[in-house]
Image (cartoon, rainbow, N blue to C red; front, side, top):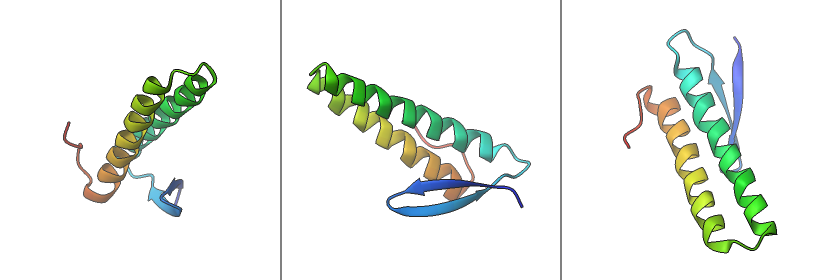
Length: 78
């Protein structure tokens, strides 16, 4: 079975790549979370600390949404 390895809270989860498009949703949330975290790192270099906090918060929210889709197999609430 093909799986996606997800690293969350120092644990590695194997997310099955099913036919029901859950993998695509999980992948979307993880990719956008990583993008936001990279943006936060760039903001640290320019000393825009208020935005660093915002981007880190956004990144955590998106990872939690990925985990929600993985655990419940449904679209996360907004």
